[in-house]
Length: 416
Image (cartoon, rainbow, N blue to C red; front, side):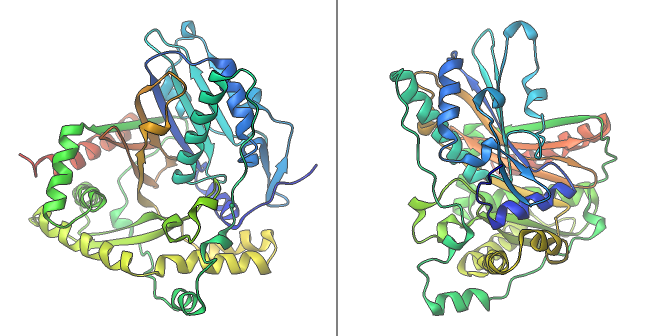
């Protein structure tokens, strides 16, 4: 049994399996029908660019074990008459040590197909997953146009070493000596969720294009980014839900923007964190909270401190065996209980599957277990989706739905 090269962030994401199944999900609603045979060919071709999806993760060697998996093992066609609920299939898990690291459900519908795509976070982060989806759509389009198309894409650089490649000694020194704030979560800010390991659900709340445009306009007039606006709404809604006046949570940042040669970057994990920490009084206006959070984010964006953790992880990866790194992660890294992640914009220009276009697409993350809670954000055609997936009771589901509604109301109240 051969092995595909393992990278530092692959091992780090495997550590997340101690609290949940680290997976990223995407749902497409199409206006027409995809050709299942063409999709299967596209998936098979895509494994050349990201061979990890056709592997299992070996817990003994802490690395990838190459298998004989093909698209037939990754793609399931669900007939229309089965009446399968797409949301239920979207919440499916992956057996990391037994199954391929990609799972696709093509659900035949009366008005058009639905595609649920699930990828192991050990393979890619949100940016990497979007990169894979763009590749899959491109390969599908090529295969649909040419029945004999068989040009396999090349794999890019997945290594963490590419992060500082091309940096000067002085720049590297600045990164290694930078000061990065540490996360200190208090139990008082944990949502009062009971949890139910046998029941899972996804809650989605949307801001329509006109609503989201108004939110962006308000942010721009206050020198704040869209993400600043969303984090402010998250912090304020969380404070009301928990009664905690101090809110602290990480904000993932795609560190590909720091690469000297981004074009060479492959489908992988390249994520670090900024830190949002804010104190709120009961009557604080939105603008006051926004100003504090926006100021924090601006300062951290000016710094290179978010590269320090990945840079040191890269050093450890080259001097220690994978098993030692896995053991060290619990001492060096804390998995946040409450978290927020903006997974960015899904580019419709790169998500056309031949002549079949999607009318709706959104991303979601891991199905959390109490007390862990996360909200993810993705944008499609100017519409913003807030999502949270959870193992919980009907009461938990309603609480999360109310929380999402509270976030949305925080934002819409600014535009009234």
